[in-house]
Image (cartoon, rainbow, N blue to C red; front, top):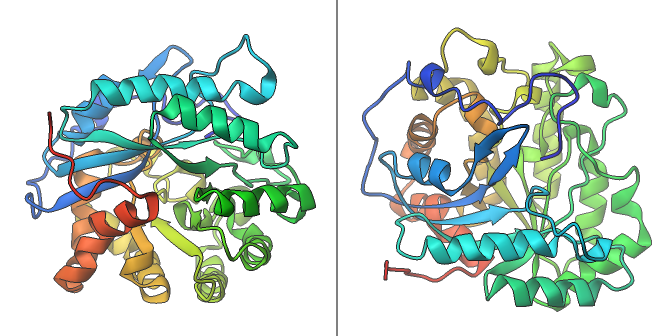
Amino acid sequence: MSGPANSWVPGMELRDDWLAQVREEIVDPDREIVDPHHHLWQRGGAVYELDQFRRDAGSGHRVVQSVYIECRSYYDTVTEERFRPVGETRAVAEMARQTAADPARISGIIAFADLRDPKLDAVLDAHLEAGQGLVKGVRQSGACDPEPDKLAIPGRGAPGLYADPDFRRGLARLGERGLTYDTWHYHHQADDFLDLARAAPGTTMILDHFGTPLGVGRFAGQRERIFAQWQRDMEALAKCPNVVAKLGGLAMPDNGWGWHRAERPPSSDEFATAQGPWYRHMIECFGPERCMFESNFPVDRTGISYPVLWNAFKKIAAGYDEVARDALFAGTARRVYRLPATSPPN
């Protein structure tokens, strides 16, 4: 995620006392979980790094692996600009080594590279070397909105990125090299992403955060209208077999639920009731084998705690059979990101 547009910095305030107001027994505590989307950072004097993630991931659910997603942390500021993100990969690979004996060990890294770069292969080679076998793909987010000042987390995507011929060539190159592509964008960019998915059928593409349906600024008070159009957009996108969906990220401030401003955070029942229709629609469209639950921590930590969030996911998934739940909580993430089937502590 990029920096904020205002003085409230999402993900920076750990808000432990506020989150502690809602405590719950862990639902289905033996279920194996792969968390395929989290960040680590030091920003604005606030820290969310290994110790903080270990505490969240170890708070009751059986999280056995995780995937780190690029977030412009730990860049190498003294090297050529195109190679600066390799510093993030190098730093996180070292953290992964430190978590080798952790229950929630970092088992994959999604790095950043500019897919438009004519020297893309050299950058990818550098990431793969620095990642020590952990780099599974690249994220170059397309999130771009004409009113960034209305957003708590304005995207840094370049206008027209998805249609850029150089970008599309780079995207195809990822598939040729066996790497995945993650992206984050806003709901009003759905048609652009659909065109992109059709243009690169050989690359596995992971849609983060439901395509971020906005609920603030000019979209405030329009949830029902946006939901109806979003449903149609996801039905069309699901026809692209190379697209996989991450289910999470709807507790961000820009989704418009307002939980970060409430007197207390939501319970898992409140979360599942409010957002369950969005989750179930994605599962219906893509199937469990192309969906994976994600925490998006620490960003979604501004609205809900880790144990309550995963309780909500388990309640949303309760109506599906065991095969489907295995896919949603671990199997899809392992297959898509090529993680070890089992990874016992050393």
